[in-house]
Image (cartoon, rainbow, N blue to C red; front, side, top):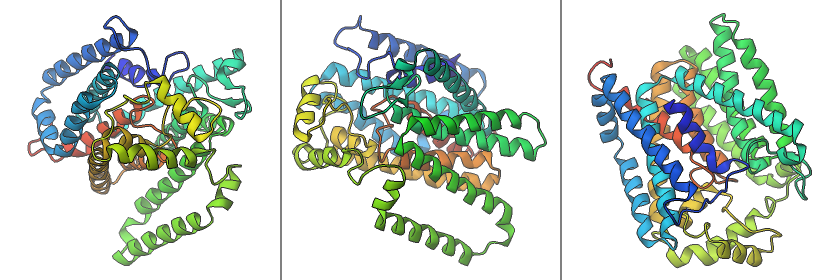
Length: 410
């Protein structure tokens, strides 16, 4: 029940029939009902940790994650310099409870458990989205120009669907590979949903979704090669692989126009670069160090329309279309450095965790945090459009942290 409610709440603001910025000026507003539910499952999670004698591991893991505590304190304190106190308070509490439940997941569940939870989430997401698209095509698709009937399913935007399903497809594939390795017939169900997910990414027509999907598959291939050839690899091989990755990235950047043409996109990334230039040149320098307070700006319709008029878009702007830029806008340079520190620590610990455990499911932690880096380049996934990805970033951070616990786990 805790997981089910947490996943729904973490996705809630990204859903089709729920406002991205719900009204939060009065305690009777729907936004605060969500916070009450977050509070309830947080209490239940703490009780569950107590019942399973995991309190020592839980506290140990939090003490080890000092960078996360610093980031949370900055996030929480940003309500005091926000232009919209009630909106920021709602979003800050949403982030706080998401982080708490994410730490609960990381302390209580294994990599395979997390993959199983994400399998069922992904299966439900695809089935319900397919039903909406087939029965209510004008609802499940974005029919207005320039979206050309792109699928959005249960989400408010096609980019959200494409990027989330790209992650879910890798979950299906990892489970399928592991199932076939263990000679389990359940892998065929994962293959079925994997193919289904590829269809969704294609018809979502999201360049971000395409790129993330390709990136995750390449990363997974590298993990599989390492698991297969690990005894034969020497230091020189790792340097060679790193060099190939760097050269490949530089070649892609040097030929970015050609790469984007493959996805039928321009160098402006569908106008994103105009938005980014405006925010970087005119908005962010005014409050460079600590930003405007989380979500105080985007919750204002006046600001959305003002940005639209400045950059010439045909509709109001509601996110920065870049997770890192949104953090810079709301929490300033200090917030961006703090978040980046948390992510880098998660990468380092996830690498060590995967190298120590040496199983494909245990490399999912690394794949997920790399996904977060790449997916947030062209979309805001950390907190702006829900907290689903943040929930799992925290989960894998605490998963890779708790195995440092000095006493045997119960």
